[in-house]
Amino acid sequence: MHRWLVIGLLFACVSVSAQAAEADGPIRTLIDVRTTHSDGAHDMDALVGMAKARGIQAMAFTDHGRKGIRFGIEPVPNILGYTKDYRSLYTTGLTSFFADLERIRQAHPEMVLFAGTESIAGYEWTGIPFRNLTLHHAERMFITLGEERPDQIESLPSYTLKHARGDLSLSVVFWTLLVFAVTVFLFRRRKRGVALLLIVSFIAFLATLLLRPAVDANADFIKAAHQQGLFAIWAYPGTRSGVRSGPMGVQLDTPPYSRRVFTDPTADAFAAVYGDTDSNTVPGGLWDGYLADYMIGIHARPIWAVSAGDFHKQGQAKEYLGNFPMDVWAAKRSPAAILAAMRAGHTVNWGLPKDRNLHVTELYLGDMQGKHLLPGDEARVTSQVTLHVGIDEMRKPETPSRVRPLMTEIIMDGKVAARLQLRPGMPRQEVLQLAPGPHVIRLRIPAQGGVRMVANPFLVQVAG
Image 1 (cartoon, one colour):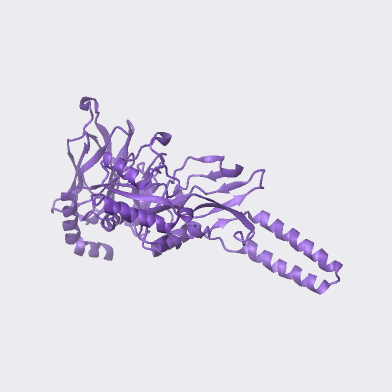
Image 2 (cartoon, rainbow, N blue to C red):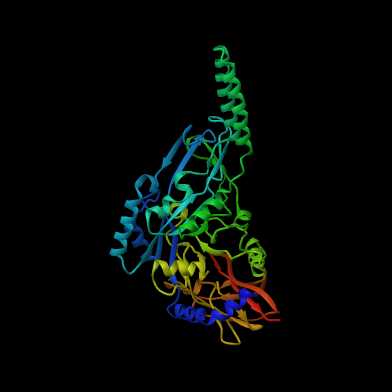
């Protein structure tokens, strides 16, 4: 109950800032963009030009902090092992990246440009080299936003490949053979005491290796990101990459990891709209379950949805810059303000074909006492509320008569409460009656004609 009391006391301030932010409209924002500082095909100048052509007003350059494969013997794979580094900020230089960012900011003050990374929290090996060597979870990635200094990236465990774990069974075989060979040598030299001491020490070492506690690489990465003040995002939880061939004949195996996304400790957000599709945002899915649990105090904070396009090259895999934008209600046009809005869940997340440029013109929840909530807001409301929603094309299509209305779902407490036919340029309102208690209300456009949309929820409480 104390949470709702605090929210009630602060709501006036929140409402004023929310209305001020909406007065200027949401800021068209794009994240998850790679540059030539890692494995992207375009430099920052080219990306800014493409972004402007698509109506993007804010963009985050999220290059790989480090992209490396390390195979080695536990517990010292960095010493007894081999590391193959691919192009990333680790190889091209953090100083160069931030200098380029500052240069492009000065050249384009009309754009909000900020930094981020895409990182692999950790991975494990199984199998035998040149036979069935498999790298697990190497495509389970995090996006971080908000880096302004090199040390913020250097402090992430991914930068040192801290959680690049070798095959434990292979390591045990290696150490066993090594100790056996040394023991035989010592016995032949009649140094039985040293040999026995080695055997006892090896048994203790082996027990330590086999019984060491499991480390959650994801939790460690999230903790490190938060210590650096960064916004952490699960990149592609419904990944459909499956088992496929990777570099040097290694098999890559990253199954979908949605359940981990919605298990504490978790990140600030997850990619809800990206190249693949998954079931996280369907009515009654894992996200709705997590939010319902948050509303009754099981989780300490909500987890938000974002768009993430994994952009590398214009036209690659039929993807184009700006296909996965967000509308962000920020108090002003600055990196700090946009990140603050994302932390508050004030975003609507789009998946679009290259010939569409839909955006939200309004989306808020009003009640009988005049409260005005943006997506992500949490407050007490009256039992009757009205959802206001409007969308439009940023650039009108050549044949507007062919633009069909979009079937849009209003989802309340994990169920579809109503369906609207949304047409660009024609706002709609829907009155909802709420029972006493907590409610999660959100808007979603399921995939149709290449268009998808997921809005962050309104989190409300109705007095009994």
